[in-house]
View 1 (tube, one colour):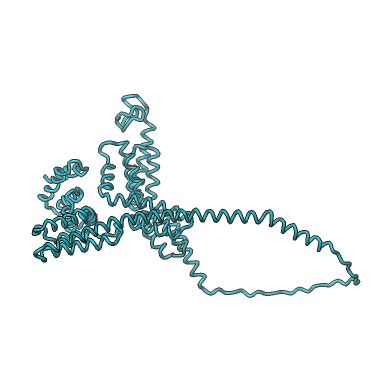
View 2: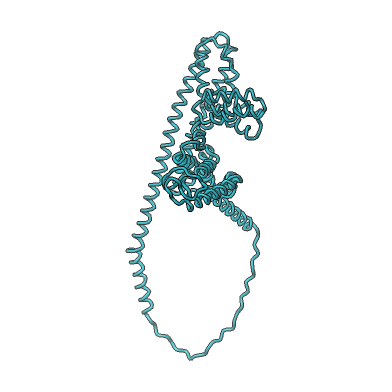
Amino acid sequence: MICPACNKSIQSKNNRCEHCGEDITVYKKVNMISNRYYNEGLAKSKVRDLSGAAVLLKKSLELNKRNTEARNLLGLIYYEMGESVAALSEWVISKHFQQESNDADRYMELVQANPTRLENLNQTTKRYNAALLSAKQGNEDLAIIQLKKVTSLNPHFVKALQLLALLYMKTGEMEKALKNLTKASKIDVSNTTTLRYLKEINSLMNTSEEEGKTETKEERKVRTEPVAFSHAPYKEDKPNIWPFVNLIIGIAVGILGAVFLVLPTARDNVQREYEAKIKTNSATVNELQQNYDSLQKDKETQDATIADLNKQIDELKGSQVDDSIYDQLFKTASLYVSELQKGNGAEIDYLSVANELAKTQSDKFDKPQALDLYNEIKQAVGSNASAALYDKGHDQYSSRKYEDALKSLLSAYELDDKNVDAVYFIARSYHQLGDYENAKKYYNLVVDKFPDSWRVSDAKERLSSIQ
């Protein structure tokens, strides 16, 4: 425990700081309540009540901002809900309060270890904000397009799923809204916004069903009452012109009021609506232009890459002697070109290209052009395919499918020998399978080859347990 007055370490059993003499009785009680909120938040997070856990963890941090365990867990919850910026912010603050032996280091390295995924997360935040602005301006169609892209890049972004569902509800597409809310509820089971939207959808769908049913009409009964007439002597009325004069004056006053009051107001309203539409359309055009420019740049880069690959293939075909040696290389290159032509980096199947590249017998190549083409493709797809294989292997490891995980992780390491996470979980997989010799080999590889990685301390600890 750290004394709030002198910032020196003190024993938790004491009620007064032995360095400065500060009474810490109240401080200890506050820390105890903060830890209680943390434990309750941890319990809720284990059953995927993420929003409820976040509320408790925030209360814990209000009482003790130095509670790094609560702050790290809050960051994990934000990350699981797709809010990567908020997660990183919590971990940076946690690192500020606890420089050494802080799990926040490991979490930040995990996020930053895959630059492609990190860039995708950054893009999702920007696209979500743009979609939110479009929705506020009434451009539902543009907002839906943007949010569909966001949820494809970051399927766990709960707020994006909720906003997309809300827009579908507004446009009457209840099935699509329900599908997105179901995804959100699987991530955060007790999110009040998700539950409120689900309740609203159920209410709307029930109302629609009831309106479809035939309704019975009640018969209306008309009762006539006898009218009593009084008899009076006949007297001829004299004509009265004043009602007609008053009517004409009222009409004139109404016309003048419309000319001087109503019409200017209506004209101003039309002008404001027109200006608002001009601003909205200008913003939409600007955003579409930016998206077009970005896509155009990506397309030019990919077109240049495709042209370069095709040129290398043509040169190699013109100079080779034995076609059979290079057939697999040509097949791999053609597949990579077809994937690049998709135009969207998120849709490129790097793993399929890597699988085809693995079948290529590069050791038999006798042409430098062939080796250059092979190395260029390997460098382009290696890290991306390795990251995808690592994610697959990690999921298999978490499901206790250690043999399957080992195959995926070994392939990931073969594609990218700098993937320390793959090496570490190769060792863990061997460890779980009881193959301690290979486990030691890969634990040592983590320690020797990646001395600056946060995995080293874990590898050393597990290595000592099997030696």
